[in-house]
Amino acid sequence: MTEQSTSWGVGIRARNLQRHFGNLTVLKGLDLDIRAGESLVIIGRSGCGKSTLLRLLAGLDQPDGGQLEFTGETSGTSDHSVRMMYQEPRLLPWKTVIGNVEIGKVESARAKFALHEVELDSKARHWPASLSGGQKQRVALARALAHRPELLLLDEPLGALDALTRSTMHRLIENLWQEHGFTLVMVTHDVSEAVMLADRVIVLDGGAIGLDVSIRLPRPRVATDPAFVGYEARLLEYLTGVPAEAPDETVSKHKRATLLPESGYLAISN
Amino acid sequence: MSLSIRNRVLAGVLPWILPVVLLLAWQTGAQLGWITARVLPAPTDVVAAGWRLTVSGELWFHLKSSFERAAVGFVIGGGIGLALGFATGLSRWLSLLLDSTLQMVRNIPHLALIPLVILWFGIDETAKIFLVALGSVFPIYLNTYHGIRNVDPQLLEMARSYGVKGFALFWHVVLPGALPSILVGVRFALGFMWLTLIVSETISATDGIGYLAMDAREFMQTDVVLVAILLYAVLGKLADLCAKGLELWWLRWHPAYQRGEGV
Image 1 (cartoon, rainbow over the protein chains, first blue to last red):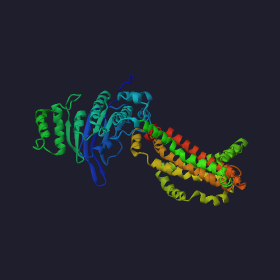
Image 2: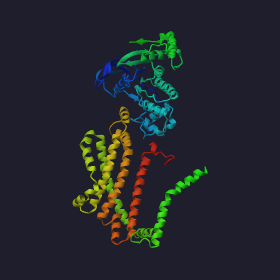
Image 3: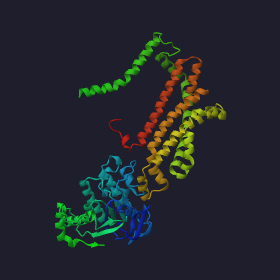
Image 4: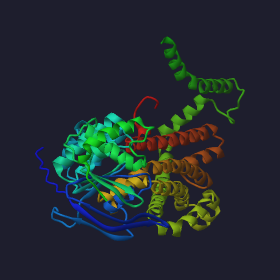
């Protein structure tokens, strides 16, 4: 396989984005710029609108107001390749692994290469039912990659996986993102996952961006790095509303202590 | 270890004990004259009658007629049921238009239509095929409709967002997703197919297994009647095996159909 990875990321500009469901306002005038090739992670409490935002970006749902446009270098056509990985792998159980990667008119060679990239060559002819949860999500990742996405959206795809598989997947996603250069937007509940993968983390709060943090750490990142822990603490503090120096939380205390000397890394806007 | 082998042998033998005992009792009873041949001829006599019919070619002649009726009726009825199921399953408007009427018609036992069918078509071939087709329509219609409506919406959303649409969406996602349910419908329809065939052939026919049985009754050939009944049993079992074979092949991706231990 000598296939060249020539995908280019696409940027996104959202202005005054609104989405209502009946009387419930999920997004109220959200402004967001995503650079082409950036890795952005969206976190927030349940019901903060992060999945809604992702579905708007995916074109699975339409905003009630505001503008949403793609910016930057494109691959030639006006039709941007946006692909999504869901919480569930959503593999077609009646197609083999390679058949699933080929869905949507993907050439066989490209599908094989994508499967190779997620290190599942040996499972090409297997049925999805015979795979583990982590393997299924890797097939789902290969399926997305085979379409050479300019924008890859991840909707908590690792939520159901065990810790070890998650950390393997983090490395895999990070490597593929760096290699392909697509724009990566991920929604997660997991603060640690956010700090691990993101160039920038935004916290959604009440339908708008509550916190916007650039993570300036070299890759590959190490979760035990004090600066890493500092970012985690900062995000957790915002999410839980509990100040990091809360006396009843020894962990927070520890994180606070490591946060202070590293606070120069924090770039907080809004 | 030896106990489990003994259990396995026992499990293999146990289901056969009752039929073998019954068969032996039947044979003995018939031979000793406890059961008159007109009520129940000896099993050996039934086998002999079967052999006689096979050799004379009569059996194949009637088998062929019945099989043709069953096949033609099933293909017509199944095809209509499948088409209606696709139509109502895929289109909300067609579902609104057709489904409630079809559900109403479905509740009429199709054998209740026999007098009407005889008025319409007389007692020739068309009447029998019509009845068989009618018996096969609804099991397949219902299960096709149900199967399509229950295709995982998450898979549909995924496929659409990956650019799969139109016929490709139907062929790669909707149809395979509905197939387990459709095959359940096929198995039900096969059951109805034989039932309808028996009834329509006993009412009026000049060939077919039903005719064979009715004709033998006229001449009090109980052994031939039993041959005809056994033939229906064998044909029914064969049809079911075919349907099972289709399931094994088409649903081989399904964990429940994968070859493993407890099959």
